[in-house]
Figure 1: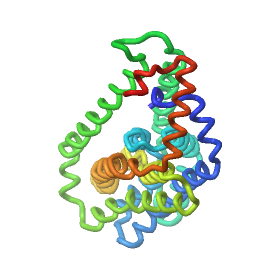
Figure 2 (figure 1 turned 60 degrees about the vertical axis):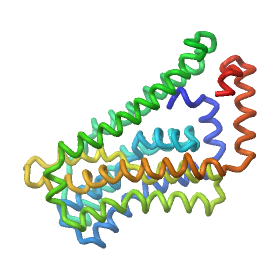
Figure 3 (figure 1 turned 90 degrees about the vertical axis):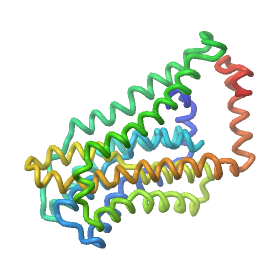
Figure 4 (figure 1 turned 180 degrees about the horizontal axis):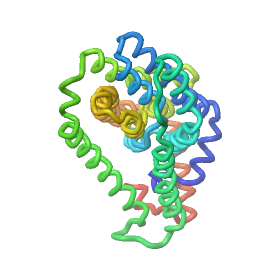
Length: 304
């Protein structure tokens, strides 16, 4: 993802402060409240409800950047929003845990601070390496392509294989939890991401964002770092019987996350992205031409 962007892309992302603020607020404010509303509507048991709140309050998942890249969205904006929500989670995660779990549900959890730090570093470090590689790799090529170009292509393929592998592993690792889940847990965990994504998509459209921005915020808002949520849940519930139920919403969300994210990404990439306005394509060509003049790309890459 770092190789697919430049430092100028991040500057460009902040030239759209309205959409940076919109995506950030929807991710950090809408999703926790939406999770709580689903808890109330479907009357989830307290232990399951705690898991739902922790998933909804989690920051944006790093995989949103990968799905945005595949969807031909605004990758720099996606990465910017992921980084902002990850940093903000140091304040928002404890706040929502206190308000919605301790106050509303009369429960208590232990926040996994180290998990948050690792999640933040997992976003910042590799993206920075990719950015630097693209910035300074202007001469060395392998089989006619710059090294950063090969990293971008190979890592994208590896990401897809990794996600498919996670689906298989999750089914085997958490099969007993799947079998014990009630219908209301299944339905509520299936609704969190699509409702959040639809809200992000149409809110961005209401604010007259471009189709590319609509796709980006749609993906970014709907995806939560449920892996971080499961880490917090594991630390919070030491008794197996409670942990079993607290994990149900997170595991259900994770299963539907793969199905929904891959489906919407395919729809965006192969249908909606082809309908992008011509002026967006023109901007892309102009940017690429400037990079060619600087020596960072070649005409063969333009043809690719």
